[in-house]
Amino acid sequence: MDKFIVMGGNRLNGEITLHAAKNAVLPLLSCCILCDEEIVLQDCQPLSDVKKMAEIIVRMGGKAFFENGDLHVNCSDVKSLAIDAKLTKSIRSSIFMLGSLLGRFGRAEVSYPGGCEIGKRPIDIHIAGLKNLGVDVKETEIYIECNGTNLHNGIVELSMPSVGATENMIMAAVLTRGKTIIKNAAREPEIIDLQNFINAMGGKVEGAGGSIVTVEGVNRLHGCKFRPVSDRIAAGTYLVMCATCGGEIALKNCDTFGLNSVIEVLKSCGCRVKEEKDMVRLTSDGKLKNAALLRTGPFPAFPTDMQPQFCAALATADGVSLIEETMFENRFKYINQLEIMGADIAVDSRRALITGVNELNANIIEAEDLRGGAALITAALKAEGVSTIYGVEHIDRGYYKIEEELTGLGADIVRVSK
Ligand code: EPZ
Image (tube, rainbow, N blue to C red; front, top):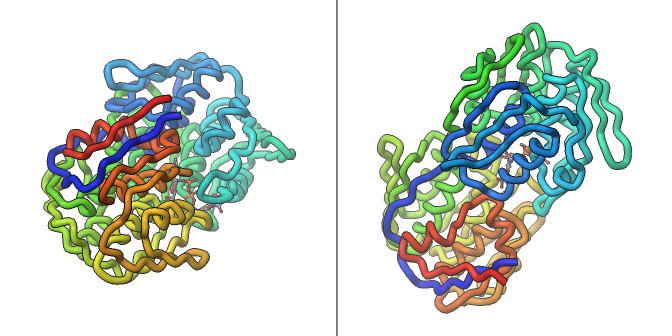
């Protein structure tokens, strides 16, 4: 397992070019199952979560491979409708495949994706929605068997705006005759991207980005080349790291639409943020003001996927900050690692009260989940001295060679592979 060695204290200056978003590419890969022609997802990095999803498609008989910075997919030969159990356990987004497998083949079998480091991650909203569309769902201890012989169009009202459940319902409806209406849909930019992708293949989806999404079933989809939306969480992560360490960075290929709430917080903490076409620039003196209250919520509220990174930034801010995590029940685990570095944070269930300290101390720490790992890098970049970060495999799930990107900004961080 790899580790990072970080010498903190450097300011970050320079430019990073963003690539396709992990949380857009994963549902788009599932969606490729609906099409029996060649698809090219452009500008996709081989993130470990994306490689796992591609592997699931290959194990089902399809083709999925990286070439010249693009992801080439062809599901014309997909036969097996059972999603590889071991891979399903290792990646939550395999559950997104139910909708596309049912939409194309009328059947699907998947093992429970299981909880993950940040929470139980139930799938009841996915199952309720599919049943609403006529799918017969048989749940056993270890897997879910779906029979979509009677899959039909209809109206689905989600009990909460679940991103994955919204994506699953859309994919189940794309090739299903008639109009399907999804109410209380998630509004994340990645849902808009899924709509744009499906429509680029000849589908008919409308309303994504709002709470009501409408899908008009079509007979088939044709192949296409498509550049998924840039990774707004990777963008936010680099902005927070620069805000914390001080310096000036520019992010290219950055669609700031999905970053508005993050940019507002950065400005309120004293950073200068300039938004240009496909570019965002941040300048910081490295001395942040506190954030009185950061409450996570479904888009367009402040994103839960940016909560750990901001907590690390606020650990050395001036004053007291409060974070309220409303989305996941176990998304503060990284805080015990920040406390090893000298952070002063009191956690009470879903709230973290952060009292800014003058400085963090370098230490030996361990990442246990993706965004918690990004928080630990943020803290290590700020701390005086040399930190060692274990658990880098969690970070590699959503950031491709992050150590190289940060070195390009002047950070002193190296990967040590055992
Ligand atoms: C997506 O997960 C993202 N993952 C997550 O990003 C992100 O944190 C999350 O949306 C919220 O924005 C991908 O897109 C691959 P949800 P998803 O269904 O779809 C509850 C990252 O770090 N829920 O919107 O699984 C659930 O427990 C990852 O990149 C149910 O109760 O999230 C959670 O509390 C982490 N029953 C809330 O809804 C269900 O059937 C939001 O979950 C489904 C969800």
